[in-house]
Image 1: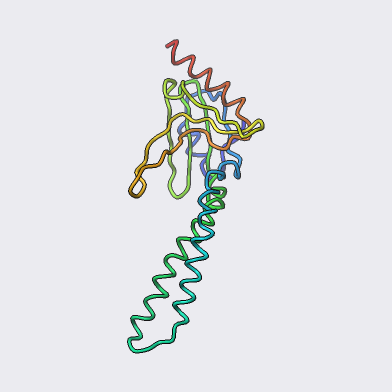
Image 2: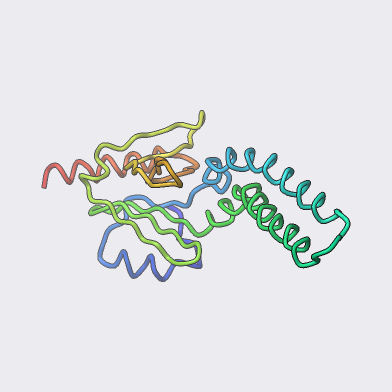
Length: 186
């Protein structure tokens, strides 16, 4: 069993007071960030076009109204920043993975996440009973408890909730099965 990250260790100990821990671990940083590589790939042409457009507009000779021509490069910088944020999203996720901790107790499964604020998600035995395991080809992978539709722009996207980026899922799966069997026998 892996110990909690220092940044959230106090919150973990307060939350788990009186519960017996069956399994606990932190995700692998790059496995946790793997879902953001598609965003980063889309960010390459987006950022390149935004940089090119901003550079081109800022090099146009000024004629007449100066305020109007200085507005265009500022407008382009917003898109450059957005493109760079897409490019850097996997690195941000890998950095935030150091403050993620997964725990399975005899009563529940818990996800601790601290990006800017601490977020604690707790799942009952019935909520984890129908989990889905997604292998990454080796001993690691993801264990998904829920899939939730989230509004995104004009459409929706599916957000997967569970233990993402596990270096090895055998221990987590064993603990979740033990938790789920307690939920059905209670």
